[in-house]
Image (cartoon, rainbow, N blue to C red; front, side, top):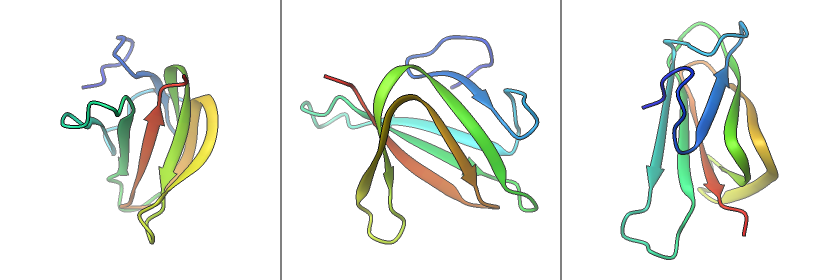
Length: 104
Protein backbone atom coordinates (compact mmCIF):
# COMPACT_ATOMS: atom_id res chain seq x y z
CA UNK A 1 0.00 0.00 0.00
CA UNK A 2 1.46 3.37 -1.02
CA UNK A 3 0.93 6.11 1.51
CA UNK A 4 1.83 9.67 0.66
CA UNK A 5 5.15 10.83 2.13
CA UNK A 6 5.97 7.41 3.59
CA UNK A 7 8.73 5.26 2.18
CA UNK A 8 8.10 1.80 0.78
CA UNK A 9 10.23 -0.70 -1.05
CA UNK A 10 9.70 0.63 -4.60
CA UNK A 11 7.73 3.87 -4.99
CA UNK A 12 9.01 7.14 -3.61
CA UNK A 13 6.37 9.55 -4.96
CA UNK A 14 3.43 9.77 -7.37
CA UNK A 15 2.60 13.02 -9.16
CA UNK A 16 -0.66 13.30 -11.16
CA UNK A 17 -2.28 15.80 -13.58
CA UNK A 18 -2.62 18.50 -10.96
CA UNK A 19 0.88 18.18 -9.46
CA UNK A 20 -0.32 16.46 -6.30
CA UNK A 21 0.66 13.02 -5.08
CA UNK A 22 -2.78 11.63 -4.29
CA UNK A 23 -5.49 10.69 -6.75
CA UNK A 24 -8.54 8.59 -5.85
CA UNK A 25 -8.88 7.65 -9.53
CA UNK A 26 -5.54 5.82 -9.64
CA UNK A 27 -5.11 2.22 -8.61
CA UNK A 28 -1.49 1.12 -8.22
CA UNK A 29 -0.33 -2.37 -7.38
CA UNK A 30 3.15 -3.85 -6.91
CA UNK A 31 3.51 -7.60 -7.41
CA UNK A 32 6.37 -10.09 -7.08
CA UNK A 33 6.89 -13.60 -8.44
CA UNK A 34 6.97 -15.63 -5.24
CA UNK A 35 7.64 -18.99 -6.92
CA UNK A 36 10.51 -17.80 -9.13
CA UNK A 37 13.68 -17.47 -7.06
CA UNK A 38 15.70 -16.26 -10.07
CA UNK A 39 13.45 -13.23 -10.58
CA UNK A 40 14.31 -10.14 -8.54
CA UNK A 41 12.12 -7.71 -10.48
CA UNK A 42 8.62 -6.59 -9.66
CA UNK A 43 5.47 -5.90 -11.62
CA UNK A 44 3.89 -2.46 -11.33
CA UNK A 45 0.24 -2.09 -12.39
CA UNK A 46 -1.20 1.41 -12.85
CA UNK A 47 -4.94 1.78 -13.54
CA UNK A 48 -6.85 4.98 -14.30
CA UNK A 49 -10.31 4.47 -12.80
CA UNK A 50 -11.52 7.84 -14.12
CA UNK A 51 -14.10 7.34 -16.88
CA UNK A 52 -13.93 10.92 -18.16
CA UNK A 53 -10.29 12.01 -18.48
CA UNK A 54 -6.84 10.59 -19.07
CA UNK A 55 -4.35 10.64 -16.23
CA UNK A 56 -0.85 12.00 -16.78
CA UNK A 57 1.34 10.67 -14.03
CA UNK A 58 4.97 10.48 -13.00
CA UNK A 59 6.01 7.82 -10.54
CA UNK A 60 9.35 8.41 -8.84
CA UNK A 61 10.98 5.15 -7.83
CA UNK A 62 13.28 4.88 -4.84
CA UNK A 63 16.33 4.39 -7.12
CA UNK A 64 17.10 3.77 -10.82
CA UNK A 65 15.78 0.51 -12.29
CA UNK A 66 15.57 -1.10 -15.71
CA UNK A 67 11.96 -0.40 -16.72
CA UNK A 68 9.94 -2.50 -19.15
CA UNK A 69 6.36 -2.01 -20.35
CA UNK A 70 4.10 -4.87 -21.41
CA UNK A 71 2.52 -4.65 -24.85
CA UNK A 72 -1.26 -5.07 -24.59
CA UNK A 73 -1.51 -6.85 -27.93
CA UNK A 74 1.42 -9.27 -27.80
CA UNK A 75 1.92 -9.65 -24.05
CA UNK A 76 5.66 -9.18 -24.54
CA UNK A 77 7.68 -6.77 -22.47
CA UNK A 78 9.53 -3.93 -24.16
CA UNK A 79 12.50 -2.14 -22.59
CA UNK A 80 11.69 1.54 -21.97
CA UNK A 81 14.74 2.89 -20.14
CA UNK A 82 17.01 2.76 -17.14
CA UNK A 83 15.67 5.47 -14.94
CA UNK A 84 14.23 6.43 -11.60
CA UNK A 85 10.95 7.79 -13.05
CA UNK A 86 8.03 6.40 -15.01
CA UNK A 87 6.02 9.08 -16.85
CA UNK A 88 2.89 7.91 -18.62
CA UNK A 89 -0.50 8.98 -19.85
CA UNK A 90 -3.01 6.37 -18.75
CA UNK A 91 -6.14 6.43 -20.91
CA UNK A 92 -9.66 6.64 -19.53
CA UNK A 93 -10.60 3.39 -17.76
CA UNK A 94 -7.35 1.67 -18.77
CA UNK A 95 -4.24 0.36 -17.13
CA UNK A 96 -0.58 -0.22 -17.91
CA UNK A 97 1.64 -3.04 -16.68
CA UNK A 98 5.36 -2.49 -16.12
CA UNK A 99 8.20 -4.74 -15.06
CA UNK A 100 10.78 -3.01 -12.86
CA UNK A 101 14.08 -4.89 -12.70
CA UNK A 102 17.07 -4.38 -10.42
CA UNK A 103 20.16 -3.00 -12.16
CA UNK A 104 22.91 -5.53 -11.69
